Image (cartoon, rainbow, N blue to C red; front, side, top):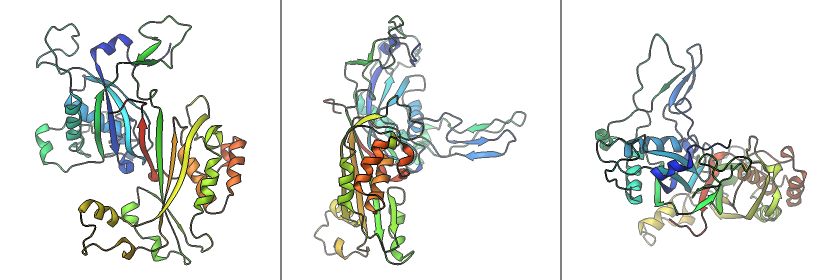
Length: 409
């Protein structure tokens, strides 16, 4: 029988809300919740030795659950679904997700009593945005852990505590996750991808489902940032430049052999053209991909280059001091002129697991002259992951936006 988290009729007790979320993935375990034994806890081996200390390390969904527990109540929401799952270290400028939330209950009501005649009040999207952001920014990363049971030590210690609301005003803010906007889901239905025609159509096997952020996404846009530099001497001073500011937001590449120089952007763009369109992307498919087919369609791939100006240029644009003599011109900043920021933008409706990072790694090989643009076409046609280069690191990848057709929020 197809798997459904909730029978179809139960959706009537909830209202579906759509959220746009932004997060810095540097210290997160990706989007998906790993369970109480998989994040924000100490994991023990059977011999009581520590296998992993994950205290303070959470997923995006894990922190959202903690915020929703405090805002709407842990029994008043369900079915958190995201349009695009991101891996550990990957950032999102604008991802989208959905949550089914019960109406606000009168104090003393039984939340499981669906026939109650007492009036209820639906949550307003703006109140959800403000409330979730309030708790997201104040939930501590390292809450006090519970005391050990000496008689039967657990294999993990869950530290997802129910923090006191009164203390939230006096804790340091954690703003690596924020909700940008919210809206009530459109009153439309989408086909059930797991519908089994051999079984009767009923509440556990419906032909269609309410609006779903994953299946209604019409385009996803990714950007990959590469901070590239080169020098004629090994470990030159420029090797270390800007690392404190960009270390978890770019793929830092420094060529110090003197025989590569700048990346060949024109060659990278020529190679990218072989990947645009509908193809079998087995050569760029990550291990563990759960999609049934390796065939996807990429609408556009572009590679851009600009001289790296650090953080001062952004400061000038936002401070109103563009013409002030107190702020140095970007061209006069002590930044080596061999520094360039390379941005690879990839657009498509859907992607395979690790597809973007595998494509970027291949294009970098072209930019460094290790591959010719025509070699990318041959790699694609071989349909063999072993024929392609390795994978680019996670920290340079940004999910820029997820579009849902004409539905804007």
